[in-house]
Figure 1 (cartoon, rainbow over the protein chains, first blue to last red):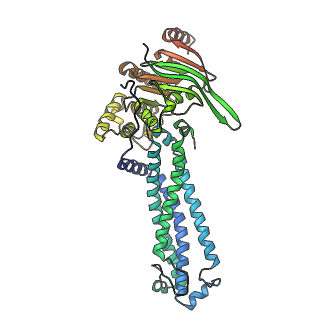
Figure 2: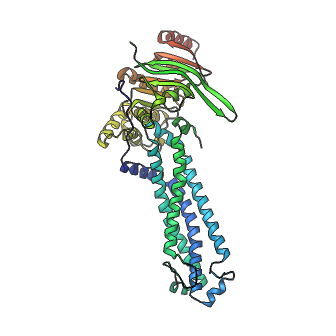
Amino acid sequence: MQQRTPIEEQIDLPFVESLRISFQSLKIRFGRSIITTAGITLGIAFLVSVWTNNEIGVALQESGRQSTINTFEETTEQGISTKDIWLIVMSLIVCVVGIANSMLMAVTERFREIGTMKCLGALDGFVVRLFLLESGFQGFSGALIGALIGTLGAVLLGLKDYGLDLFFYFPLLPAQPENGPMQLGVIVVILLGCILGMILAVIGSSFPAWRAAKLPPAEAMRTEV
Amino acid sequence: MNDIVVKTEDVVKEYRMGSNILRALDGINIEIERGEYISLMGPSGSGKSTLFNMIGALDRPTEGQVYIDGQNMSQLSQRQIAAFRCHRVGYIFQSYNLLHVRSAHGNVTLPMIFAGISERERNERAEKLLDMVGLGDRMYHLPDELSGGQRQRVAIARALANDPSIVLADEPTANLDTITGREIIDLIKRLNTEQGVTVISATHDLKMLDVSDRIVDIRDGLVERIRNRDEIEIEVGEVGGEGE
């Protein structure tokens, strides 16, 4: 039994221990994790499909095919229609709100767990790191699946609009046409989608986790959802 | 000389409820000796759980000081408070507060992970503790697969993981039937007598009376009276006579 010794400082846990706990938590909470991840997947799939669709449209238009240009009635001098910009911005907003909401819910229902871990001696930083790891992994895997689904959707849509010509002019890589706007290319769009999904998931989860970790444990444990 | 393990000095806790301020604790002064079994009693809303939270460093008092082992809790750094919760105190809650994604074994090892104990040692210790509380055969069950009494046993084993000198129990029997509650009380009492752990329990369970060394009655955020064991024994008789 401990006697009157000064209270020591809590130690930092090795990174591998945090990694193990966060993966264990994802594994056991598999069903719930899938739903949260699905939220991210949907948001990114929507964004990437709209964006890729736009890239395909611009690429085929740049290729100079008359039939392609005909499908873009509102095309501006720069090649991107206001409608497309509107669609991309809207899908971006839907994606941000959707992911932030699903991460917030997933953390809020775990406030009690956060309070309990602090009772057992967890440092605030450890709690935040746990959520950072969990959400980073969920964000990346969800966004990657979403980006692939979105690209597939855009390709199918492109096939319907342009037929097999799509593959001749497929904007896989970034390109800078002589007198047109910079094209990102589908690979960059997929990458950006993954990064965005991961960042949104990490922010959406770590911020509430950090707030809960800062609370005194009694208060965190009182929170009922 | 008495060995005071917990001392509170004019502890006040206020909660803001909209525009109203609720004074849950209104200047509490108590001293608890090492090895004592203390029950904080009072009706719900009396402030006993709030006091429990102050003693366990689970919440900060609005005014006043809490000293544990002679150290002023308000002067500790975040890291020291985390270490205090990890090593010095074991918590037992009314609603068990087990992590439902971790097995009984996983719950008991968690505080040891935070303490930096090696995997082999924490497995050995968790097995020993779960055996002691009578759950040797259900070590790898998830909390959802255990009964209320069994969950509370896991919580007790977890509270003892890092060999604390104080066990804080907040209404540990409130969600349990009479017989299971009795078993849990006996188990906590055994820790107190056999291992010399100081037990501080917030309760309104009368079964807690006859195992307590002292009872602190809390009412409206104040210490109403402090009763010793000999006074308690008489009252238990009375309570029994009234057909409790």
